[in-house]
Length: 123
Image 1 (cartoon, rainbow, N blue to C red):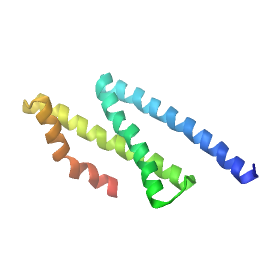
Image 2 (cartoon, one colour):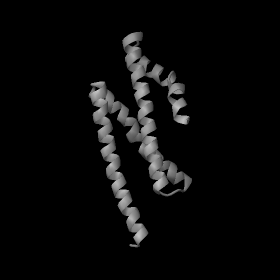
Image 3 (cartoon, rainbow, N blue to C red):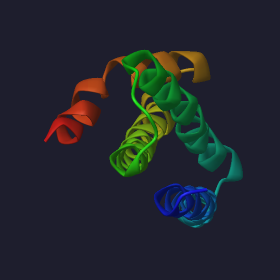
């Protein structure tokens, strides 16, 4: 194995470890903030599902996994976490304050704050 390939392999292994550690840290912080294991897991499901989507996008674009791709993957994880927090928080508030059913609150949360959630993401 050549020196650059070996360095990329080491970088990939370290990045994978950092991603798993980061997701676990995010989960712990969410549990501490929300005081609810289920809501925290709901938020992290979006992060876990965004990762295969990123790899599909790389494949369809004909791109390879490189350092800029890894940085983009980290950014995607952060944005999807933030958006999930906004949607889950809105659904919980709609149930508590608006008296909506769980299903109606979820639908309402997905429709209403989507513009508010996307506005900071595009900046």
